[in-house]
Length: 384
Image 1 (tube, one colour):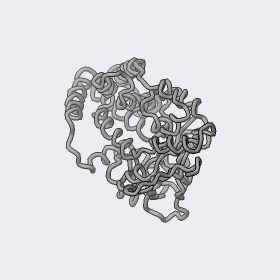
Image 2 (image 1 turned 135 degrees about the horizontal axis):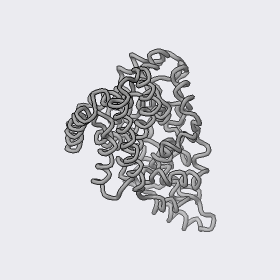
Image 3 (image 1 turned 120 degrees about the vertical axis):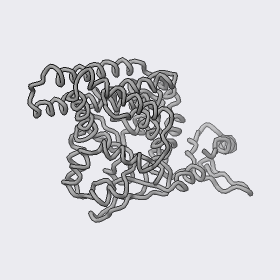
Image 4 (image 1 turned 180 degrees about the vertical axis):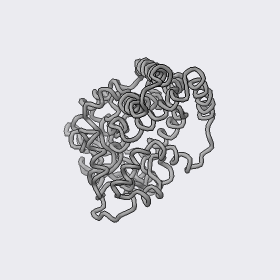
């Protein structure tokens, strides 16, 4: 066997081939070239992140030192929670003569901006990146959920982890738009504008359509939020609660801080299903834009994810990335080639077979003899 070959043969086992996407793991699939297409783009390979992670670790094992938690995330969450409740108090109890238009403006520019940050903190807590103990991460998510009116932190944790596990798998990835969204919205600019405005509602609807039985922590979250909403009305006013609700609606919809929901997986380039954002919005939103890096290494908290980007720059520089969240929204709405259907999907069988039939190529070490290289290649040829 040649020292440059990594195929393994066995009389009783199939050949395990090198993944042809190595090392960047970009696909060979193309985006639709016609505007009337109302279907997802399909791929026959599994998601790219687990294998790119292995390729990065093989070249940069020091990346493992970035794993861990960031307790300061909880402090940030407490500060913005108290701030938003203070604004709700003033809007509902002090500035009672304030015109409704002014209240809506405050809800967008102040409340919406902060509400979008809540989602980022809940995301960090959902991956247990705030504290080592899962319980404390759940409580962090519950704390930030207080000004959000609806119970979201524990359901997001559940469904987001499923999104990581089954990225793009039809019927299993809760982040994928519904068929009804595609048929209704498609590439109509006006309907896409309304869809972006109502993205928070659609996210909840997708979870409901999956008809999964609520888990214990989701029921705890629901009970706690009912009690908290009652307390807000009792101690402040219904106007205060309305301000908080409108803030969440804006912060998860037509707002630059919510643009990462489109930026992350909606297809803007052939062969690439996940996208990062490297603009200034990462400063306030805790580097949520580094989405390729996050999917590759969900064990790294937001304070160290840029270090990964700098260490493995040869893996991330060639990938297309966004630099403006405002432009992401504008492009999504105005381009006839973009819509809810602009996502990559795969069958569960393809999701598994890509891991069973292909592997990350073993780097050739010129210092090894052909026999030594073949032995090392065979030792590393694992099905995962």
